[in-house]
Image 1 (cartoon, helix red, strand yellow):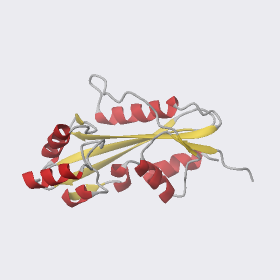
Image 2: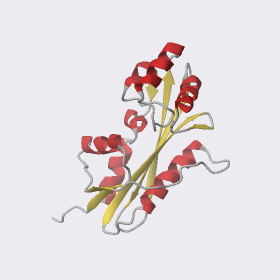
Image 3: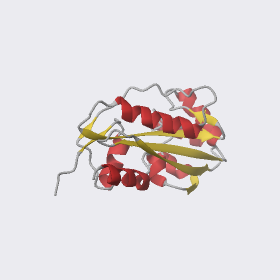
Image 4: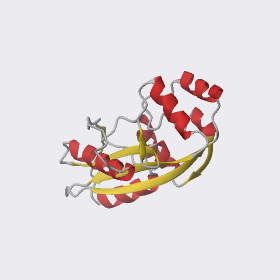
Length: 189
């Protein structure tokens, strides 16, 4: 019986690391990538997530390892919400998400040892309650929104605003586990 190949996670996200551990796939190494995440003109949220996951997987130079990368995009219709970096961005995201549903697209890309990158995309619909000014102020004060797609973390305090999720919860957190396990099982043989 041969040893499994090394696994490299192309992400500095502690959430992705924890989700991988949940399915018994702890990476041997974590390498953060520096990929421009700006959408191309006319690019849909779905295609953006797929392109970025692939670009991140291909950015890691580890020919002796299976490379796993992912990207999460939050969208209302075709409008892509930013990874909130400022309070103003987070407030705008939350105001837009209030009392409506939105989609979270998380793409996973795996580059096996043979070099042929494969991807999967999970699409999840998330609905928020109507957010009051107080709800938004409380959430902004938590600081939890920083660097989060759409300005919120479903696994944290924002869970109290979610009225429904249709699809993969783990995808909204940052890594669709079913799709990831499927790709890794094939690549790690």
